[in-house]
Every structure is written in C-alpha cells, then in structure tokens.
Image (cartoon, rainbow, N blue to C red; front, side):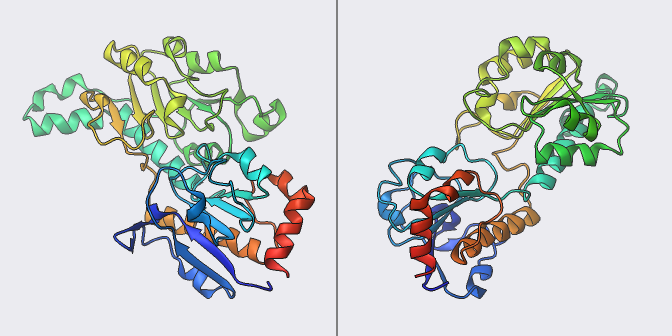
Length: 345
C-alpha cells in the first residue's frame, strides 16, 4: 500500500461522540498500517456526497447509499455494509461508480439462527401468555395454554442461504420430522445433499408447522407473504420473519392473527423502520416483536466489526475481500485504474 487509505464510518455508529456499539472493535483498524478512519459529520437517512469527501472506503450501518450519494466517486473504491442485508444500497450505482460493495458474510449466521429457534420454542410453548398468567394471578388458566414441542413437526424455510444452513444445523438435535425449502436459486441436488426437500412455495405454506424467512428483499420477494399465502398456512402454524419487513404484508398478517387463522408470529423487521410508536401487533399474546435486533449479541457485533474492518484492510492492500456483492466491478478497467491509483501509486 503506497498511500494512506481513509475510511468513513456512518454517523449512526456514534452517539454524542461515543461509539454506539462498543463491541465493534476499531482497534483492528488502528493496528493496520497506513489506514485512517473518521466518523461522518451529520446524521442523515441518506449518505451525502459531502460526507464521503476524502474517503476511500465507507462502512455503513443503517443509512442509504444511493446513486446521488455516489455522484462524486473519484476517490471512493470500497463500501461495506455492516451486516448482510443491502437493500438500502444501490448496487448498480456502486458498480457504475467503480465502488466495490461488500457485506459481512458469515457473521450473522449463528445469532440469527439461534434467535429463530428461540422464538420457535417461545411461541410453541406460549411463553408470553404464561408469563401474563403469573402477572395477573391466573394460575388455574394454565390448562388453556398447552404447548407443543419441536419434535415430529415440519420446518419450512424460505431462502436457503448461509443462515438457513446454520438454522438447519442447530435444529438437528430437536427431532423435527421434515425440512421443506423454497428457493428458486437452489437446485434439487443441493437440497438433497443438505437433507431437505425442495418444494414450491404453496406446498411449503400448506405443510409447514414453522415458516421462517431468510430471503433478501427485492422485487420478487416484496409482499411475498400476503393474504393468499397466509390463507394456505395451517391454523397451528407459526411465521417468523428475521429478514426484511416488506417481505410480509403487515395488514394481511394482522388480519390473519386477529382472526386466529395462524397460531402466532415472531417479527424482527417491519415495513416502517425505525418506528417510535407501539406496534399494533403488541396486542397479541402469540406474537413476539423486536426492533430489528433479535439477533444482536456481543459476539455478533464483534464478528461483524472484524469482518467489516478486514474488507477495508484487504482493499487497502490491493486484495479482493470476502463478501463482495458486485464482483463484476473487479473486471472493469476503470475500477482497476482507480484502485491502483489509490493504493499502489
């Protein structure tokens, strides 16, 4: 690396000048020679071109990176999303601007899978309702809340990526009967090797006792679970969404829960984020909610931080990092010329 590589951190990593997430260990960057990092000034929903001034790389928590953000990309060569979802990043704009986009692949697999199982158990054992019984002194009503175990039940997974594989691994000791998978990008051979059944969405919805969403948000998955899909579910089935809010139509889900057409839900993400009002879903004893943080752990933020920092260190040392989304950018002569100019000249 011939010159200093400067990394911008979006303002939502800081609160009153202090790190919002102490487990994000920036000392990794401190120890890397020739790197400098700085917090962006001003907290906005969309990253401004002025906030990227002087930056060669940017690590993004929850803000949008748009085509307008990248209007002056002469010295920016790398962007890393602090996580695995990148629906707030314009991937095509990154490629056009000769900016490599990375995610922290692998860092979220265990915590999301673990949290999913936690909700599966809590919902099937009526944990929330039983807690309320004790708060209200209703001991004798316990007979009305008989739970169910995970054994001999059918798991349905929508989107069979790394998180789903980890979920499958952690569930292996619970004695579930079948695992059904819906993912248009997974072939029969891959599914068979993993020990799951590849099915169409309608069959998964009809047959599954638990349905867990692990697909990205895009044009084909927006409102993937709406009234028609919810109508196919068993009245004893549970829906868990730790992916993105708009994959599930919230109005239709609310109606299904209000009419007791499904047994419950765990919701970590919502159509409107952030939200500072009490959720209408909080009225249900058979629904668990989290502000897009059910998988947040000390271990998670430590892992994501290391992965994100490593992508910047690799880019600064003229090495293609893990977790690149727009791999085609590395084939562009204009990208290569910029990258060489910034880190080799």
